[in-house]
Length: 289
Image 1 (cartoon, one colour):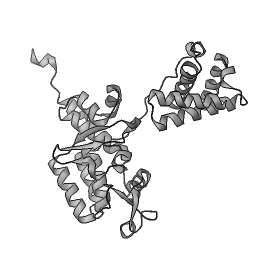
Image 2: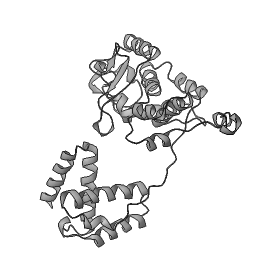
Image 3: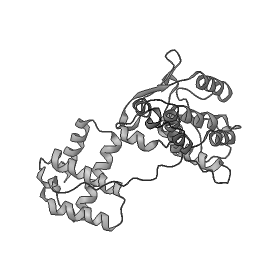
Image 4: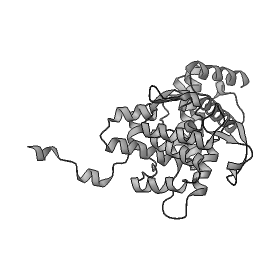
């Protein structure tokens, strides 16, 4: 199996898939072969794949998890082993639409940012996410050189799937970053460097570390400092809010797709939630007759 594992890793690299996807696919294949008592993948058949995927379904694994295993096994048999017939009659699990989180109103967004008013590092981080639609991992990885004042752009060099893109840098967002730079004085080259040590308490008093802040730490801070109440915001809700507000303001779905770094407009459409008052105020074509 080692030679198959090595070849599949090389095939994934040749395809240009991200390190995260490569690791995930290889893990899925390892789980698959372990289920069949460590048998070499080149000796397994359609029935082996079918029984494994049925096993996942019986365990109650989510449809997206099952689809991920299906994709990994399809790559294994089609690309690495050159046996496409193994997967021809095995249907891809249908991925059920999951709740996409919440979209904040403008009042809710202001209330959330006010929570961090006395924490300039956190305020700037989450305000920038709302202003640009960046994923939390993308915001955490930003470097000073990614802020292009002249072109009024922020260059995202470590996007999902290791794809780069650019997002807008408005005058207000630039002023936010300039004020942050003066008040916080972060350690270059990172825009949001980590602090030495761990935990949210007294983080502002510790010296800067020589690496970027961890996205998980920022997600924890978002949960930690939110006041008790019905408004419980996750980091991805800021991204959904960004997308929905742009659509509500009349921007084209394709533009929003590019700004979010989505490969498919269907993904962007799932992110956006148009508020009911905007739907109610929409003029029907019939009314224009």
